[in-house]
Amino acid sequence: MHEIEVNIRFCETDLLGHVNNNNFFVYMEDARINFFKDLDLVGDDWNFIIASTKCDFIKQVYFNQTLLIRSHVGRIGNSSFHLEQEMFEKDSGELVAKGLSVVVHFDFEHQESSPLSQKMRESLESFQLATK
Image 1: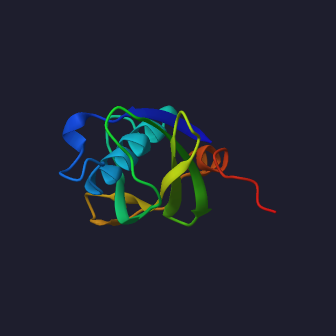
Image 2: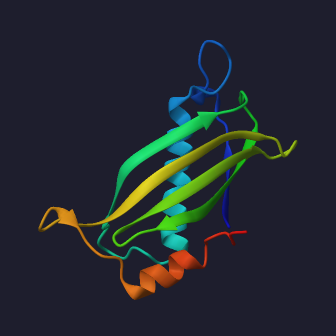
């Protein structure tokens, strides 16, 4: 499981006082980029795109809270994988949101998906949760 912390800034809240839902996608992106870097999946060339992303909002989050974002790999396909992310309020440990992104390995020159290399697969598999 890959994990980062995000501190909620005042500018990320809305008139209702809680974090605006758009910001959860930014938090997911931040965690995803750190995930790619830590797995050494990207070098000088960024060759991943997002085909789909969703987020389920479970609890409100407020200014000055800290979130723990835990990311793990779900399904691995030929040229894509599912990155599942759970966001917890750090102090209480409560689940506040969960997201899913479909990430595609992409060949920008040919404008089409490209198979994951064996090295990429092995890196991704190391972050898959054991299934029952």
